[in-house]
Image (cartoon, rainbow, N blue to C red; front, side, top):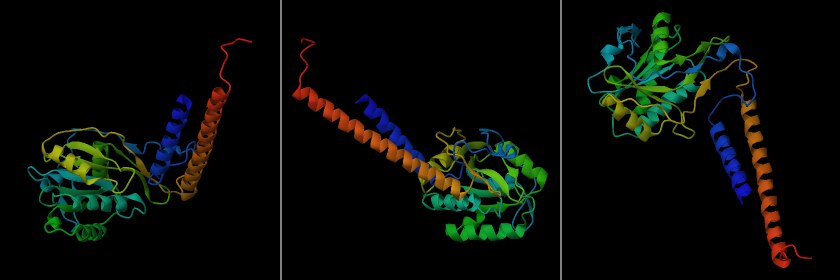
Length: 287
């Protein structure tokens, strides 16, 4: 029975891994990631003060700072990415909006949302298009005062990314390898919590977001548990391809089949041995 329990546990873990693989564009086990991309990730810097006076630019090309955006008693949801990202950035932004819509809190009234581009070539025109699409998707009165899509120069981008521990790298095709994460910021501009995509939709559950915003509004800080770090990475001949994803799924299914067969035969052999002991009880070693 002990062996059966261990195998059953392994089967459960395998099934969990397959479920998580559905949303994680990471390479299959054993795949070599190019050295240049191995520093892509997140180093949490809880309670660190953001550069409130760093020069950013809004959708009108006007100079703006986080100090101007932050409001007393109002936390901020911060995302770093780039406006022409073909993979996770927009998906994460829209998932954040979906979760925000489920709350009894409102952007522009109870908290704010800020997207800062890590691509210095992104323009206010692109920022305008993104901001308008997020406002339309959120579709709640007053949100235009709380949704900000900002662009910046290289020095300011480096300052923000280093401050929040957001490790990214440009790729050879003009895109960026970067982690998928959002940060909750206190009203005075300190990092309260890092939010990572969960294994199911919505990636950022409303209850988790609301709790993080509540903590931030009170100046509290908390570490993230069971973080699932997704990496947005695209390059030619990449291991981060759908083929690799399919291979992971197929390998997982085969593993489940093998484990399932093993469980079946163990149960069958156990039943057979039990029946044999009933039909032919032991004579205690006597001849």
